[in-house]
Image (cartoon, rainbow over all chains, first blue to last red; front, side, top):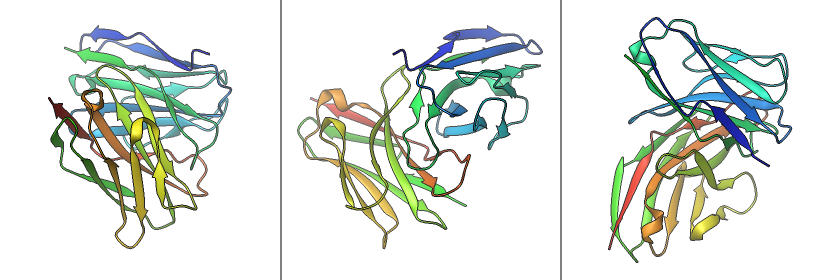
Amino acid sequence: NAGVTQTPKFRVLKTGQSMTLLCAQDMNHEYMYWYRQDPGMGLRLIHYSVGEGTTAKGEVPDGYNVSRLKKQNFLLGLESAAPSQTSVYFCASSYRPGSYEQYFGPGTRLTVT
Amino acid sequence: AQSVTQLGSHVSVSEGALVLLRCNYSSSVPPYLFWYVQYPNQGLQLLLKYTTGATLVKGINGFEAEFKKSETSFHLTKPSAHMSDAAEYFCAVSARNQAGTALIFGKGTTLSVSS
């Protein structure tokens, strides 16, 4: 099992450009999450999904969109990148919320210039 | 609403010394509590978690944590630090019975281990 994978690992964007980050999991998990990690801020939830075809906003959703067309994939889109979106992005998945472990991908380091 | 406070953004210990990383939480409902570790340039990995039952929880790599409801704390300890323990550690809380909720993370504590 690959677990949770993220594509790409690194990306540099110019302000105003768009991109999509792909997260894939092979554990048949219902729940998937996108977090961003900034120095001294911990991880903050951007969007999450409780199942195929569903998405919901997290703590910091502005400037991002998501889609969950297939159970195993969760896409994070930036329509018009801003320097404030420079961050490391982590995808995670879990079987259920609450007490169940979240499994994290290796992260995508995004720089917006 | 829930929140997590990790006391000390950076902790330094000598190899073989006790490791103590502090975490206090706030939750209006009985919480689930987690400790995750992040090694450089990697994702997060679960160290241990508290759900119900025994309040002293043992995890991987010799770490353990004790849930103290009266103190709203979930401090992480390891009796003897090893160089390989150098990493960033995150405490997190999750709510019971709330569909779709994710983890609320603390801001993290970087552990340095010197020889």
